Image (cartoon, rainbow, N blue to C red; front, top):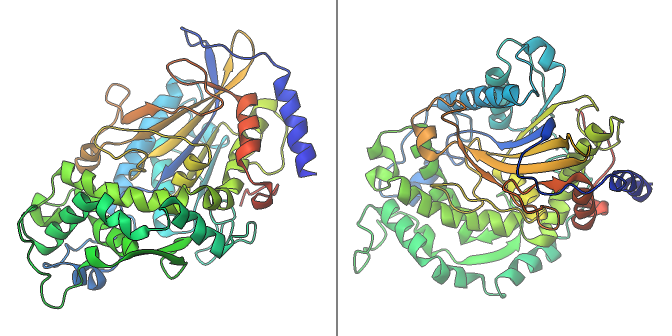
Length: 441
């Protein structure tokens, strides 16, 4: 039944002409899907754990570990206000919040920071309306974001281990050499000595040198990752606070204890990006973990284009805006499934910044009637986050067009015919890891 449904809507879409690259944009925005990361949060690990990694105590945040900060909520509201300006200009929103609220669909993962981010985003985008943020309970597994936990997909643990280890030539410890500059910077910051000091001083008594724990690939443990990356996982816990310290606007003396500028923070993100790439963009893991989300996203756009309710989609045929808020792992996974890449100033390639989002615009050519998808990645810069910078159409967040392999055509915005995207989706999505349930919780 699933295959027959996919074939039927694909054939229908293929009956319309192919849209050619056009020097003048004559498309009209019909629907947009914003898939964003939560905004600035406190470090995941409590200071009682983090302080075992460092010579000096980590700075204290005002909220519990892993929770959205007050500034994080403000930044999401600022971001929501920018999207309000953007999509009102595009004609997708009318400026009448109560009327527009009937045509939006919000969904967040089950953790506090994603739900709070979605609520703050909605408050900025539709400030005079009450918007319901759909989400599961805190102990539940949302099939959209956690298909394995929800029983939709099955992950073969040994195959997952082999797939990650295979990307490393069966030699995970070799990462220590490949990422030696980042590890040296991390150690110098944690143990409070100048980068490049020779010989490097020993670890302070009673402290754990995270950079010496062997990198390995093993069965999933308590980390929440699909596989356990050994020492790499501990390094990620140690460097995770640095970007949040900077983005939260802490005093410069509290950002890596005064040793990290924005450039230094960005360098530490290189090793953080490595962990996400291995855990979320390794093809086998990606197909299992991201197929259900990808299926619902593509079906939602087809539903909007055809005007017919479709199983396995989000919202209704009349939904103009879908906002999904989750974690960097889910966004990285969806991007990896379609082989999407982006690069914004001040960040590492493919980094999912706090509040950053993959934006998928469903547009219709006013000449041919063809539906196209225009992808971009949008995010506040590190300094816009740090300074709580107001955003306007003349002073926007950073943005980059995203090329969709096997689909995008040659124009400045890499437009992709929806019919072609459906074909790409059929190729990359594992039907065994996706369902056709209407996941409108």
